[in-house]
Amino acid sequence: MKTGGLRRPAALPVVSLLAAALLLAACGSGGAGGGSAGGGERVLNVFNWSEYLPDSVLAAFEAEFGVRVNYDVYSSNEELMAKLQAGGQGLYDVAVPSDFTAATMIELGLVEPLDFDRLPNVTQYLVDDLRDPVYDPGGRYTVPYMWGTTGLAYNTAQVGKEITDWADIFDPAFEDRILLLDDMPEVMAIGLWMNGLDPSSTDPADIEAARRTLEELMPLVKAFDSDTQSDYLLSGEVWIAQAYSGEAALAIMEDPDITYVLPAGGCSYWVDVMVIPAGAPNPDLAHEFINFLYRPEIAAQIAEEYPYATPNGEALSLLSEEVLGNPAAYPPEDQLARCVFLTDPGEASELYAEAFTELKLRATE
Image (cartoon, rainbow, N blue to C red; front, side, top):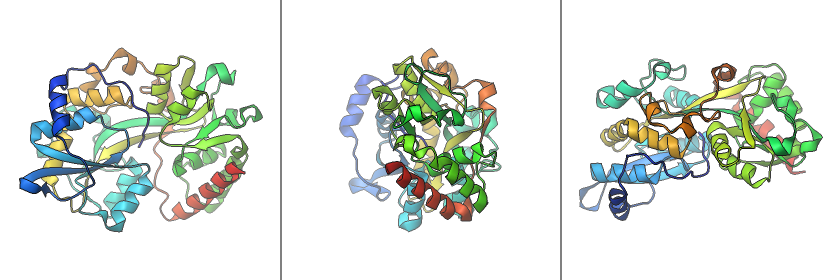
């Protein structure tokens, strides 16, 4: 779900530099296409969040399996759904929606059931807590890719006080120094939590109450961004950012003055999952790719470069102390207990969208 700045490559024994150089020279690029290119070349078509999978991992897969990977990106679940529902079926072999979007895709018949006989690494290494998730009961359609939280990252030296809850950022001293995610459900959830309401409520009165509360925050907001929260924080352009945990972890690694908190009033826990879209041109290759990403050394390499939490239990033992000890990537259990999954608002999505659009316009005034 969650995109962000590139971290230095992990120092893990995954792909040798010589192999990587050869692979990069051989790999192709381009938009999603058919199952094979000229000369019978096998092609895997992947649709993922930007900056969420290291190039070296793609290169390693291409070399070992003799394929070319077409890698397209999106910046929101809404963009992913729009593409798939507007004729995108049959274009992609693997996509990576967030949990609540995956649930909607399952309900609409937009994904294929997985064959776990062809996913032995998933069967062996997936942590137990995610084997029967609420968004995919029985775990038939999805494989967790990364998980994380959404909370508040802030620069302690600039803010000058401890932040423990959402109400703490409603302070005129922070005018033009706050960043919110360009993520409708996550932003609206702030207003719902502050009113003591269900963060996924579909009640029009609740949604309006959240909008009114958040309207008070808009004069303080510098920007809405879901891609580079760490960059905004590290540059000093903002002091406080509603942030995905991996972005916060990146910022903490670069600046010890930056910290991350899961607000006491409520926070979200999410899982980005791998699915095979309905009509995928290469479902066999898609299974090979998912199984490849679940090799512990590969999963660890991904989590080192993009420090979200890995759902691969064996990979945890391969992570550096810098990543494993990062409180944003792997928060304390007592804080994590505050978090909940956000769910798809369904028919109330239009009300959410209208409120979110109004808020963003208010922030520009």
